[in-house]
Image (tube, rainbow, N blue to C red; front, side):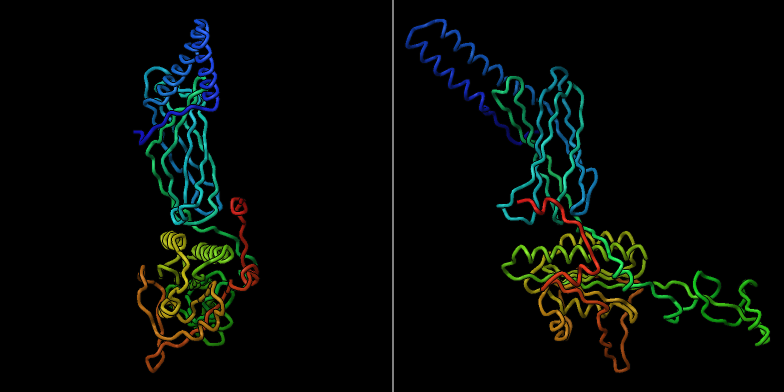
Length: 417
């Protein structure tokens, strides 16, 4: 059902109306019946155009469906269907205008208004068209009411109706590409280097020998060592180990942020999202801590469910002047194991000084859940040992540290005025 409607004169209609007024005035002043007849024909043209434009949009249904697209900067495909519910009289020249706006933007922000044109919709049938668009920023976006209009048949009168068709889409952070420098910096850790050994043959380098156990294959027997020890000895191989990764994202910005501050925040969020998406392929224990306006700490086995939840949290994360870095710092160290990797990504100045001054634990962390594979370790006196972060990436002064490991493609919409 239409929420509201409007009928307005087009520019050509105003020209015709002015000409009609002039002809009618001249006919009355001169008492010319022929000019009165012409004025009547002109007014009748306007009335016929108005009535037909109103009839063209009667019992017209329009639906919208978001087909594909989730990440910022990627193409989003939206399908619009127009159905003519009348048994007779098709609809010509139907224009459908959509409205897309980011929820967290100010009221002064201009919404995106993609437009489609349906040349003819037969009676009792439906037509579909799709349009592609790129949303440069992450976060929740709202699709507002659909604006359906027509100027059929003469283009003198425009009939417009607004149909209630609200949809929401959560645009996830933009994913970039990890450079070879980062991949070389974080190689897989073998089980043998960590003391975790698995009996039997596995793909990897030769690690050691051990005594034969029930269930071992004859192919694993090391005959030279067996002859030397005078008992069956089998070979043992090391296999690639299971990595553990913890990402601490510190989204700081001043009370009056500039465009450069906003760009650094988006860059940091995109880097963290790329790290999580890349690590979820290994299915190891992962942790994501967000020091933002709404602090979040997620931990679990890196898989599809964790990746989706982490991407949603990153999409909704908002920077603030005082993010709870101390609380997330302590929580990250409490959850990761002794061999876990901690990557700290921050947009604040003097990150090293801020981390060195952290002490104690803070409260108010939301969204925590169990972390299989993570466990805190304590020393003999009951205190937890201090663990240095595996890598710190600071984006306040410049992006040189990040560009060494990460690259992303800018969306053309970001460069638009």
